[in-house]
Length: 120
Length: 114
Image (cartoon, rainbow over all chains, first blue to last red):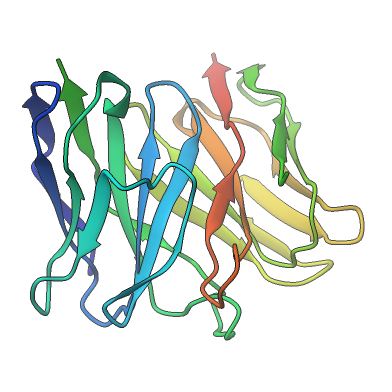
């Protein structure tokens, strides 16, 4: 069964360093997302992406964050200068349909296993 | 401000018992999703509810959606230990464009004890 994959599974970095988190969405999906989950808390939306552009972003997704689809399979999240409060689990997700445009499964999103980011 | 509220946040049940988890949301939406998360793991899609009155069942879990009341329920029947996990509801709300985005509740941590 197709699945979303993410690398690395765990990233440890020093405050102020840049990190790139990588995701490979499900191959026939066109809509991509990043979420984060601070330990023990709820899952928070960061950004959605379609057709090589950001569709929407939350207040969390400030100038320190960027996303890119560098080739036909990878989808990356870059944090330019990490802060302690960026420590969290970062989940990539993909969907076949965007939601409002309909589709039999609405905006059902499939999540990757996550990357645990630890900023020291 | 959009709010998605789940209750209870913690639920300890005995095997064989029934219980309901509630998910209230504060804005109009007719798309709601339930996910399961095991400790240290990712989110697994359980149910997709796309209209008022939608009801879906899978094994001992049944989810429903009342868009007028802005309420979804996840009902657990005859709980077993394998159902122990954190359950999240998520509402599909576009922030401005046409691509929906999931706004999650805080999750209900379910523990089923023998």
